[in-house]
Amino acid sequence: MAELGGVSRRTVRYYVQEGLLPAPLGVGRGRHYAPEHLERLLQVKAWQEQGHPLEEIRRLLSGGRRAATAPAEVARAVWTRVELGPGIELQVNGDRQLPPPGKLAELAEWCRREFRKR
Image (cartoon, rainbow, N blue to C red):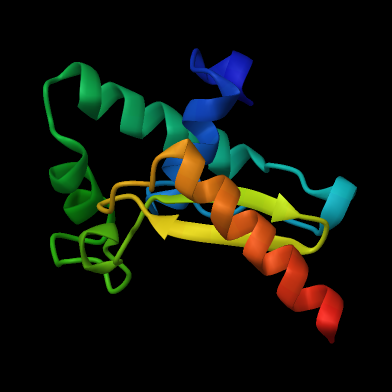
């Protein structure tokens, strides 16, 4: 579908995530797109080429009203995952600064000692 629509597969996934395209049909490896998906993709692409921003396209697709699952309402966060040891990881919110490598090594060693005790 991406090739037929003249976009990348990543763009198709992004449009699905943003609610501009419905999710593919089926489950697992059997997921697929129908002709209606391609029609919607081509419409979104045409509106974009006319200069419409994605938020306006989302509104157009929802019949002029705000979509019920508008991505602007979805809270998103970026996290950094640091593996401290087998089965032990530290997750740090993206708006926080990671401790220096030496402190991370100390934390990893402390965690290993504590989990060995249990």
